[in-house]
Amino acid sequence: MRFEGPWLEGRLMRRYRRFLADVQLDHGVTITAHTPNTGSLKGCAEPGLRVWVRDTGDRKRKYRYSWERVEVASGVLVGIHTGHSNRLVRETVEAGKVPSLRGYRRIRGEVCYGRERSRIDLLLEADDRPPCFVEVKNVTLVEGGVARFPDAVSVRGQKHLRELLAVVRQGGRGVLFFCIQRADAREFRPADDIDPDYGRLLREALAGGVEVLAWRARVSVDEIALDRPVPVVCP
Image 1 (spheres, helix red, strand yellow):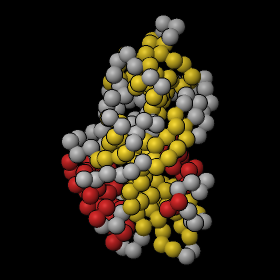
Image 2 (cartoon, one colour; image 1 turned 135 degrees about the horizontal axis):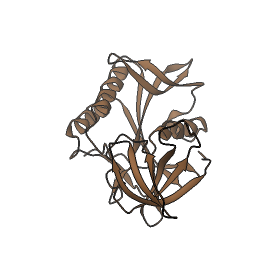
Image 3 (spheres, helix red, strand yellow; image 1 turned 90 degrees about the vertical axis):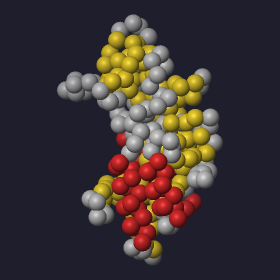
């Protein structure tokens, strides 16, 4: 995925009210930017971190600037926009780069399904195989090379695990795809200390036939691309 600017650099002053962040730009002006991420952004929202905000150019928006990148260590950029993860996974699947998800003729997004009234991120279809339901989760938390999800208790994420498990039990294919928007992850593990119920349900889903994939991304200010898979470890 390539992104059009203009981009503005600065330092994060604070993130607050979940969707807002104050940023002091390099030329000294302080702006309030929208934060397109519902998680805690653990490790990615510390005051003083270098950030990049995009000017949407939309003067009708209450907050025309969007905070979308943060440098958490020297040269390690993180994409925090959760809305980009679905597009990243879709373009990677459509390019045939994910071996286990090749061979489907149709891809649809945001399709309603399940007993709990969910919307699947990607539905892969072909005439000669069961439908494949792909739930995408955006990951920004990495500690010691280990990518972890969720970074806050996720009741919604728990629901999606139950839905995928039900899909498999009904004869379909369920896939959970962790999109790690940073390049310093060596493996993925559930964040059991943050949301033990999610970790329990993830293991139950794995035991029940849900497939779990995790890919890390190469991130720059202007481009994000899923780069390679990392092992999923659920001890």
